[in-house]
Amino acid sequence: MINRVLIRLKIVQIIYAYYQNGGKNLDTAEKELFFSMSKAYDLYNYLLLLMVEVTKYANKRLEAGKHKLAPTPEELCPNTRFVDNLFAAQLASNKQLRIFTESQKKTWENEADFIKNLAEQIFESDIYKEYMAAETTSYEEDREVWRKIYKKIIFNNARLDEVLEDQSLYWNDDKEIVDTFVLKTIKRFDPKNGEKQELLPEFKDEEDKDFARRLFRRSILNADYYRHLISQNSKNWDLNRVALMDVIIMQIALAEILSFPNIPVSVSLNEYVEIAKLYSTPKSGAFINGTLDGIVKQLKKENKLTKN
Image (cartoon, rainbow, N blue to C red; front, side, top):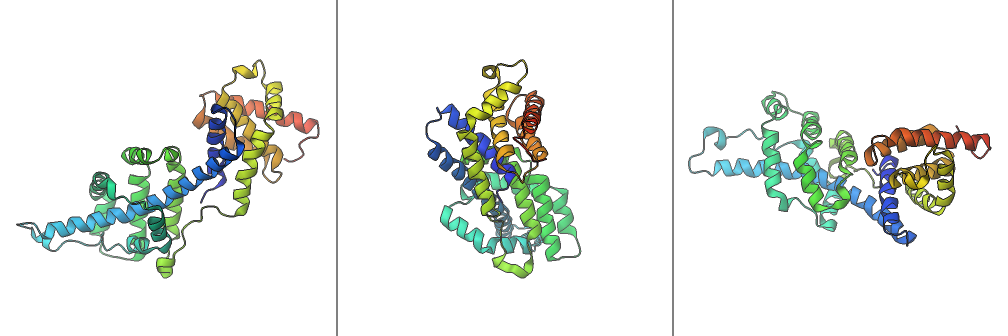
């Protein structure tokens, strides 16, 4: 699940904190990097559980309606399509998700008000109303309604962002990327797999894990060389006047360009220009792109960089 886009973002965050804290302990910073990535994986599991929790709330709501002093005919014989959703039931029974809940002791039980408000928002949506009124029913329809709900209601939800921020500082910048993995997971679910449906792994493979470790260490251990290159190619700029975040982003970009021959230069440049747009000043993207492009041309001219 933790792809290279997220790895790069985490490395930028941790190296910035490393320098802000005086750059004293590389091993401790590396442990913090991998811990922060594990927290992103926790968020992935936690957001999957959110769909289970909303379904539970909907079921409790129906049961409460039946036991009113004067229930309406609709409350006595409600439409149970949403609470009987086959995808949600498969998700609730998922072995990996149950292990996560048991090992991390992580549930939505302390967020009852948020769950209630989110569920009511879902119930009022056209997506829900059309789903409940449909004449046909199938696993595919049950899975698709949750994909739509997640994409339209949960994906950009300011209240949810606040709840997550209160729970973990590590989740501040993770949700937008993790949301894409949750949507991907919904699409991957197959009723034939039952409770054994595989969720996305924390890392795709050992190569990505090694990429994170090598990029992090080389960014710091070769910092003097990278900053020398940056200084040479920062036209009309004293390096001390360049924003620290810009320097760090270029430092990591150069570590990637010079250490990973299988990654095209254009890919690395594009990735770090995008990161600059997120974490630095409005003009940083153009400045970083121009500076790195000049360094790449210089290194190629000196035969120190041979890849495209």
